[in-house]
Image 1 (cartoon, rainbow over the protein chains, first blue to last red):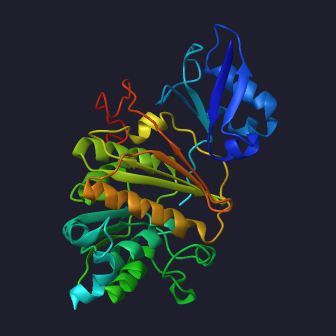
Image 2 (cartoon, chains in turn cyan, yellow):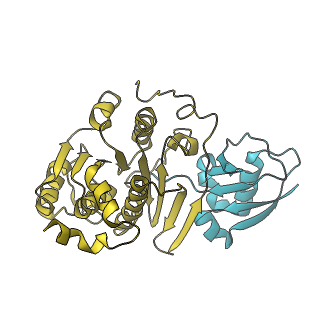
Amino acid sequence: MHLTITLHGRYKTLAGSSQLKITIPDNATIWHVIDTFIHQYPEVAKDKSRMMVTKNHSYVSPDTPIHKTDSISIAPPLVSGG
Amino acid sequence: MMNNRFIRQLTVPEFGENGQKILESNHVGIIGCGGLGSHLADFFVRMGVQTLTIIDDDCVELSNLHRTALYTEKDIGTPKTTTLSKHLLAINPRLKIHAHTTRLTAPNTEQLLASCNIILDGTDNIPTRYLVNELSVKHHIPWVYAGVYSTIGMILAIIPASGPCFSCVHPTLSQPSETNIPVIGHLPAAVAAIQCSEALKILLGTLSPKLIIYNLWTQQIDHLDIQKNPDCPICCKQQFSYLKK
């Protein structure tokens, strides 16, 4: 399926746009979205286990299945310095 | 004298006399007195907070001075809480300040913070934020998360009754392995200023919380709308595992 995902923070800067069109399998999970994003932008691979991904505005785990009508966004991990 | 002191912010329409009264009547808690916490304390006391709790177990170090407010070279080696208190009392001698030179832990969290009306995050680690989040949900106390890295700051106001809690956004304990993370010197002041605005809007009842991602270098600001997780163990199921440790 084709999906347009929304990018936030430095991911948006990296892609040069807040929207990214990707193609993933019909039975995809959030993992497919993350892996496709990393494939296009390998420099974000270090964030893989901590990326903040939302589906329809709620945080979801990477195992969550997705459908072509879902609204998916990816943001960098929360930062912790004080 | 007091009217003269705040005259320039009393005329700000978003804040006004009502905002000033609300600010002066609420007890603000700040956890951590480093880059974020020292600026938060400075802002809130200058703006008129009358009752403040600050918590930190560290001493001032030379490597803190590039990003903190108020501390000087003479303060190196002194406890941040006592030194910050001294500077804050010089700004307002009538301030009621509760300064605790201790680490926030499960046994002392409720004792130190349950009387606050709002809590500001100036800590530097995720486990402490889980602790504060559980206290916030259990006692219905709003708090404002913030973190900094390099030139980027993230801020999220948490109003437990109506919006997502910290665990809705960050459900698993995963921290960057980096120590001595990079932070450009003027970033904590900018992020603390945004945090301060979010806190004021919570107190005034005018905030719709969103996760804010701010890049101080590029001046890009991004707002991420996140809803409550219906399966959240903290805010939906009231399971307070960090407070019980």
